[in-house]
Amino acid sequence: MDWGFQNRLHRMFSPVSSNTVMLAVDHGYFMGPTHRLEDARATIAPLVPHADALALTRGILRRCVDASVTTPIVLRVSGGTTILQDDLSHEAITTSMREAVRLNVSAVALSVFVGAPHEHDSLTHLSQLVDEGEEIGMPVVSITAVGKELEKRDARYLALACRVSAELGAHIVKTYYCEGFDKVVDGCPVPLVVAGGPKLDTDRAALELARNAIDQGAHGIDMGRNIWQSDHPVAMLKALRSIVHEKATVREALDVLATEKAHPSARVPAATA
Ligand code: 5RP
Image 1 (cartoon, rainbow, N blue to C red):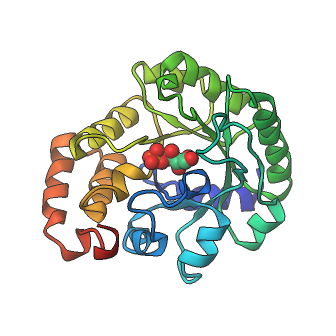
Image 2: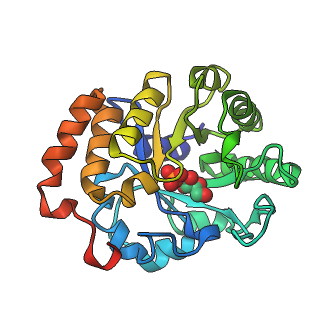
């Protein structure tokens, strides 16, 4: 791949750990004003300095993130349905590659819905984005969406969705951690990053998820709700960084969390508490 493509990738992944901590704040594109992301600007601002990349839509990027921010952007370019529909897989490409370049983003991302009614459309959209992205040097992230069927987060299903994404040319695949995750990694020849899914009962559970995913071969996380729905989002993000980049154990990450909780910047902004 050309210099521009490589440079975009290198901006997101640490040269030391080879991993990345992406902050996902794209939920509103089909979920609306998600809890603690209602005021996206207030949620995002304190977290941006501690993220290796920010995953969001063009609307939130333009309205809620200052153009002075230098954090790499992963631009969601698929959408077109909402949680009011039973079938969440009916997505189209909603943002052009030209727009992605104009916004100076580091990658574009779309959801693929393997096994869903619009599987074919989402997979051919991925192929189309890869063609366009490779022409201009833009990495493409395939998000293996499970829609409302959270039980789809098992190794056989995710291994299929991740492998198909890689076969169609995705440069990075975002998926879920699951039992037997090493099998998902083994079958996917491009870097995997894991989402957190709905908020877990404890911060420890989210840290364990990240630790297990990295141990089994993930190249990082692309996490949202378990960070910004935490009572201490900045502290949580820093604790996750210690796992992803510094090989911290869950115990050590919990120590980071406890230390960082003492900082005023670690607390949830009053407007979103
Ligand atoms: C929304 C997404 C999210 O970016 C992804 O699910 C990661 O966020 P979370 O950790 O909250 O699951 O793709 O469609």
